Image (cartoon, rainbow, N blue to C red; front, side, top):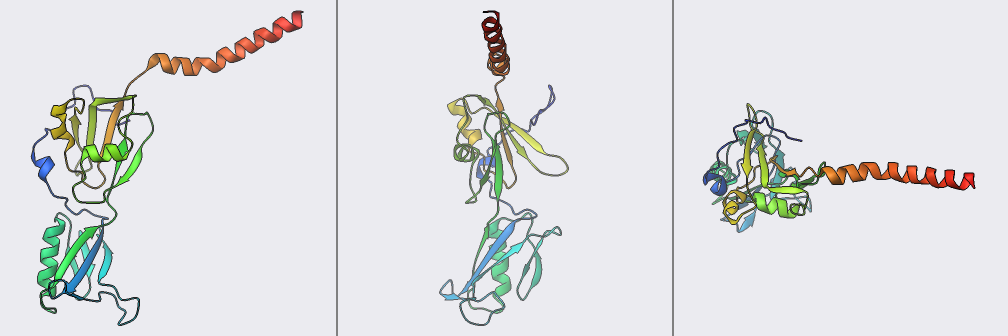
Length: 224
């Protein structure tokens, strides 16, 4: 899986990868919460006027045109902005209608895929906060297995026009810097598996040896 050519040039690691904030992308599910008076009073953002269905938040999908839809204001651009940037922009909009609006923005469906060293085995890990790192995601997936090469960990970032691929060495303490890279939605972490020829051969030949030994035993019994 995820093989790269022999002379492939991997993207260069930089410290900005460990300090960057998550930026909203298409198909993110964004929860926008609004309170007035600096968070003192709830504001109903649903169409319900009263009762138990009132909510101080809405969930809206980031569409293919990079926008989300908000009550009163319709569509506003969201892609490429951090949650804090979007919060500040929405607060300015609702300041026209409410006193000291207090807005929080959360992306609720972010996730990454982790293949942690066992060939063909992977997990989808939800990103529960804005600063989940490569090391945290690997730990959540169960860690690097005995069959994984901790010194060959690929981070594949799905960006256009083509994915960006980093190669990290997490086998040493020095690799902690790279392991603290903050993940983006839909990143792929791939720990290259070790090729264990002897084990694979043993697993494949064992059934044949069992059949052969059974045949020999039956043949021996029949001759008697």
